[in-house]
Length: 350
Ligand code: CP3
Image (cartoon, rainbow, N blue to C red; front, top):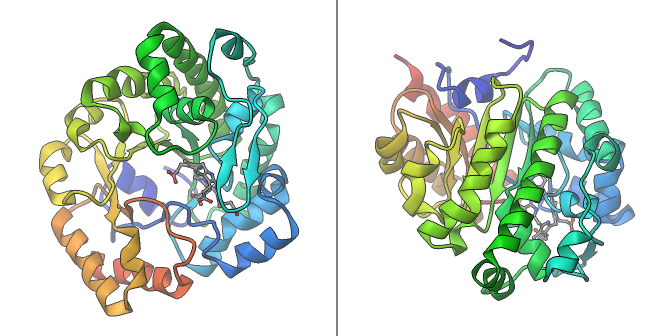
């Protein structure tokens, strides 16, 4: 299928047989690694994203240091709104901020259509360079935010407690909200196709804020646009993962969205979800990220619980239920990876 030395992750995405369960971790290239913090001391976050040599180096850190089965390109979901013309600032401690959020039709008009080969060339260069430096060791995942999650940031201007501005928009001016979501979805489709052309072996769509919507609104304002993007991905053999946090009510609908893999947060038993949709899609997840504060034995126990809950056979990609936290000792993640590699063999023996 590919020239990759380790293609367990890609096979599991397609529910093909594997010798053991593959593992990677959301936010695996990040602040919990001293090697990341050393680079971060010398360059601010956006400079790191925009310098392909640095982005490639950071992407490779968890491959070399932790031994995960897939790399995810170091970047951020907010590079798309920035490419559409929004000024983005990264504030130390509090996270990303758009000082001029989108609140009305005139603001919306100021957003430009993007050409990824120009406006996001630095990401495509980072993908190509990372592929070269990976030298076929493991697959490379490209990613994007979902239109809904991107719109939430663009309208709120920053992280939010109750998302009143974006919710105000969808209920007071649904037409404008849909126009914006459509425009963002077009940008995301172009961007993901360009990332695949640059060398990404799989795609993950993060819908971090899908769970703040009711079931109907999730389907109308988020899932519909995720479906549109997936249908526009040109290379149909590239696995697509959809990670929508907090949307346990919609898994049967999510399983029909065209994704190969559905990512799960830690609020459910993976075995229950497998019974519901496991004959349609592969599942990714779903250990509580805070278990990594525990000792190595407890981490192993919890890994086995999740492997057992999923049960025998392929179609499981081990991951956390959300990103790894910045104060986790890297040795604990290493212990998790080792446990999954050893303990999962028994679930693939037939
Ligand atoms: O997973 C990876 O290792 C790849 C890199 C990656 C980053 N952000 C790097 C990052 C990915 C996949 C993301 C996605 C992302 N970015 C999401 C969706 C996933 C999720 O966690 O729900 C969201 C909502 C964002 C927006 C964002 N970027 C926030 C809210 C923050 C600040 C909070 C935080 O965790 O610091 C960022 C900054 C950011 N993105 C950092 C990293 C490593 C920290 C930057 C730093 O070094 O200060």
